[in-house]
Image 1 (cartoon, helix red, strand yellow):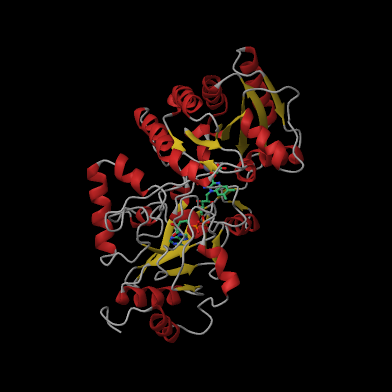
Image 2 (cartoon, rainbow, N blue to C red):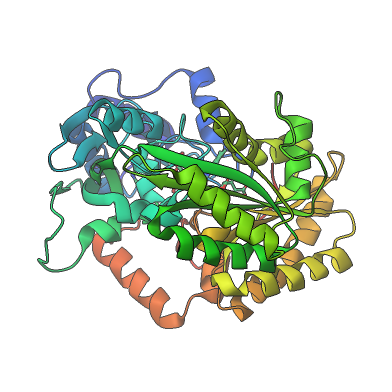
Length: 488
Ligand code: FAD
Ligand code: 2HG
Ligand code: ZN
């Protein structure tokens, strides 16, 4: 059928069924339903069909079929993303392509400290494959059990170990991807040095399904960690947290693995909504840091951390601290932190702002943005927490369960604008680690330098001239900006 041929869903579906081997299309409506809404329930989409390919060749056939007919394609991994990037639009004319059946570990090369996996492996499966080879894959997110490595690369995910190991892009040596026309771009080289022209791997990582579908990746591994030391520290304010981070880095160098900031409101949400958690400290404090040192060799890290924290207490940069005495206590401290998003979801609707500023600007930004929220959003509770070691905070605002969706929708654009303008004034980013998706298309148009946007559009047009790859995500389709409603 040509591009100008019949466009009705039924005949397209019939043609797609005929083009694909049996079993590729998901025809079970109950199994399909959760794939058509995003994790936060910001968007509810419809799809022409849902395809669950089993091989790169099947992905290539699907994309060639769509490209010929100008059918939009929405790649989906574990569907844990926060920006609605993996949800089809409301037209019912886009093809959703889920990668969950492509989950082979293709190769583990312990000597080269690398492994090659298919995109549909969950992050937890990739971590386990590394451990089985006595190696360590450092990407760590609260969603590790359900997000997929293809989704992690497509969003250039950050998480809890960025301070030491970098974001997903820094952990990637090679990718295999299928481009819009169905051609396979195979860059699965396990090389640390490869200076042969444009960096296509870096381009595909972070492209959120708008340039192609990642089908496999070659990832960097490290030796297994042999020692960790973890502490939950009360700090007087954000400035003290920033000063504590600098002291730790001077004292422990690259061993500083994680440095997460939590306000009392985040701790209370976790204690109230998640079973089996306890406050690690006797008294309540305004702010906390969860910090961790790690080493590839057996080192007395608890002594190093204890000494650094003792100095910080003496200098007034900390007011109390609990050091994990064993692996069980360490896991409990991390449960507190990793469950904050789930606790916030259970508490009611929220507005999320995934921002970053230079680390030294964190105290000023938090003071100004918090003052604005207190003055203008009396019904909201600030829950500004996250990866302070990377200058990245989830500057979130929780609302009571009974808040009407209409009220949030009315207030959200004003709140977003105020916070993101403050972020820009502090030299920061309105999307530190979650990407753009559909949610932040309008923000990218507003804050990206015009030259940057023009270059992104030129790349998009060159690789996907018919605009079939994840239309309306990252870059506006047909001049529409994104909208940012509130969700859980
Ligand atoms: P999806 O949500 O399915 O898709 C995300 C985007 O990638 C979409 O645009 C989609 O089209 C595209 N995509 C997916 N797979 C492919 C593919 N194979 N090829 C091309 N495009 C593809 N994120 C962080 O960065 N840091 C965190 O600390 C963090 N913590 C989280 C904690 C919780 C509890 C939850 C629920 C989420 C968290 N996230 C975090 C967000 C989310 O888990 C990440 O963005 C993750 O990388 C998304 O992976 P996914 O497989 O679920 O992708
Ligand atoms: C995290 O750091 C995630 O836990 C969730 O990125 C962020 O709740 C959020 O906004
Ligand atoms: Zn985060």
